[in-house]
Image (cartoon, rainbow, N blue to C red; front, side):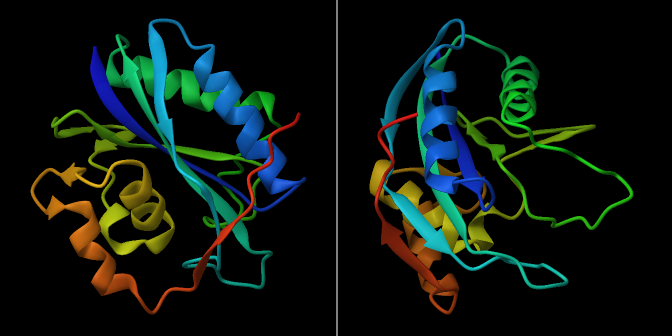
Amino acid sequence: MTQAIVGLGSNLAHPRRQLARAVRALARLPRTRIVAVSPNYVSAPVGTTGPQPDYVNAVAIVDTGLAPRALLARLLAIERRQRRRRDPSGPPKASRTLDLDLLLFGRRRLHVPGLVIPHPRMHERAFVLRPLADAAPAATIPGRGLARRALAQVKHQRIARTRTHAQA
């Protein structure tokens, strides 16, 4: 079993509910067990070209027997079930019902088409670092050190804890 960190985000169709459904779907993955889930945070969109609603973000820590690409395939399937639409011709940072990112996979570094671990921009994003620091204070980003230490570099990004939706 390998410990993996999954980033969750949504800014459409009841975002807190989307995250709660995604966590339940993660719990149903084969050979995978949820270890911890952070509180939810509301954050401003990052890197968008036009106005968007705020995002709700969290991280889930899972122990999994799945390989990284197999886990990513399952995450993408969960996104599709929750009506995530990826339009290659659309804007790259469009609003979405659900975004699941494989942020860390143990201490592995991996760079293959469609998958880079650790996630290449996670250390620049408060919406990843703040929930990660809550759920796993000792989490380390390979090649960068303790994730919580990177929080000082993103303190200008707006993020605030919000309630968690417990029902479907």
